[in-house]
Length: 244
Image 1 (cartoon, rainbow, N blue to C red):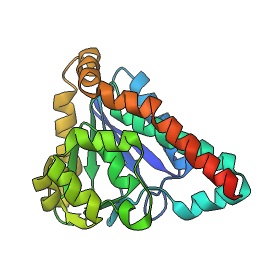
Image 2: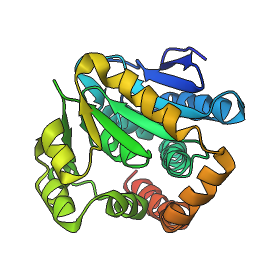
Image 3: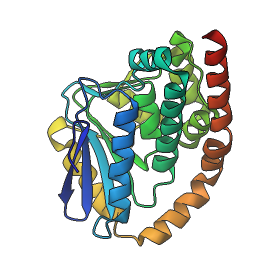
Image 4: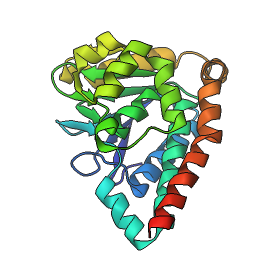
């Protein structure tokens, strides 16, 4: 599956999804839908035992929600924003509960939603040579959804959460490794290869068993995403309609 948003390459039993959507891989409805479609294809393909997600840009992995695009959608019809936020909820749930190993190879800057989504992967590897992780939401008045907070608590210590989320500062790959956000750092030329090797290792397990173990670990997070985040989305849309 190749399109304007991503490409797919099979490396043995591992499918590598590479983002190349605009200069920063920002989240829009078409971008999220393309990712959901690709992941669904990989899930149905029995030859695919694990998935790696990365990006082709030298500078950016993703800067998350395309706020200007979302505002343009809202100016046309608030329901278009509603549709987008429901897709965002779906991809967070899909990554968090994906039935096959999912490894994220962060090649460059991961900002906002582009840093939240990798939290939902099983492992996060990052470029040692470039890129930073940043959660700027506190500085731009965008609170996290309950499910976003839940997945962050699943991978980070309370101290790391405070440092990363209360400040909105930038953190290098090495700092992110020390804080527990990143699992491994590798030189840029080795990053995807190392992610594929890890995915192959994880994919040796029976996928059904892997999913059961993941569900046991992340069941509470998934429940929050499935039950609480739609309520948050509903409140956002109601507020937007009240302002229009």
